Amino acid sequence: MPHRIAVIPGDGIGPEVAKVGVRLLERLGLPLQFEWFDFGAERYLKDGTILPRGFLDTLRRDFDAVYFGAVGDPRVPGNEHAKGILLAMRFELDLYINLRPCILIDDRLSPLKGKGRNELRFTVLRENTEGLYTGTGGVFKKGTADEVAQEVEINTRKGVSRICEAAFAFAERRGLARVCMADKANVLLHGHGLWRRAFADTAQRHPAIQAKAMYVDALAMDLIRQPEAYDVIVTNNLFGDILTDLGAALTGGLGLAASGNINPGRVSLFEPVHGSAPDIAGQGKANPIAMALTGALMLEHLGYPQEANRLTAAVEAQVRDGAHTPDLVPLLGGTAATTDQVADELYKRL
Ligand code: NAD
Ligand code: IPM
Ligand code: MN
Image (cartoon, rainbow, N blue to C red; front, top):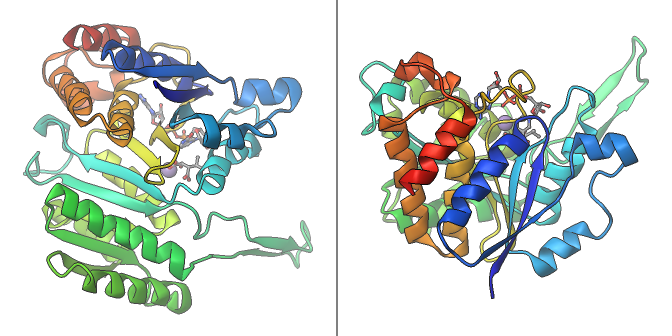
């Protein structure tokens, strides 16, 4: 039976990079069957569809993975379709692990003096189903001088424990020594007190791994000062969102940053960390490498570690010796190539 993969290119540069990603994955000769879906701003503006009724059940029943470009379009300023597509899949499919490797491919991509491939190689596991992202809360007396707005952070023992457990299990699988949990327990006593307790309980079950809890502000600083002190970082939904853009900037930028939204053994969603980049959409400037590396994460999830390594190795060689898109020119020098030129070279390498 082939693996069935739902491709949702989405908006802006999403379709430009999704096309490349699928072409590279097809080159590997694996039993993968791709089906394309047109959800995104265009479809939403045309007929009001965000995700059709029953689509999530279809994913659960018939698909192994979703390969996702990006959503976000200036014509939908409230971003409601993006929440309805991306966050709905994260929540409804219970994709509780947002896996975001921040691993430097080439020393020239590092913005930090003296920090290269040996120093910049941490992975963030971001809690992906609760925290400040659930939409719990409300607005009272909207638009008046007395307006009250409340955004409630949800932290459940089950939700926090399972992402902590996933972080330790990840470290063990990869032979990594250290797991750091980032919170703001000095101020958010209730919710992040729960994180401290759940993290300590989980750490006790993994005595061979060094466990450390840190305040997120101190961690943000330390990731610039000594990134080599971190192997695995586990944190809540919002802090993980912020720290992984920081992690992307430390490792070559959003054009290279890949991610998985994972529930082990179930249909899971793979997307680059970047958004739809409306500022460069349609100009052949999008870096397809984040999407390619995202494909490698998906292959690992599907049980093809060797092919994932092949794809990753081709990307690394491309960054070292090949053409690159404009986002990498300040870091690598040379002249800018187009998305398709980079894609063609990558294809040949495979
Ligand atoms: P963005 O990631 O789209 O872009 C930020 C900057 O990085 C831009 O200057 C862009 O040109 C550049 N960039 C991003 N990806 C690139 C790539 N592959 N190659 C070269 N340059 C790249 O973030 P934003 O501008 O804050 O958001 C734009 C839209 O995307 C918004 O609607 C936002 O909500 C949405 N968004 C969606 C996702 C997602 O679908 N997962 C993630 C983040 C943002
Ligand atoms: C990300 C994005 C999303 C998030 C947005 C688009 C909802 O920034 O995947 O990092 O905040 O999780
Ligand atoms: Mn983000």
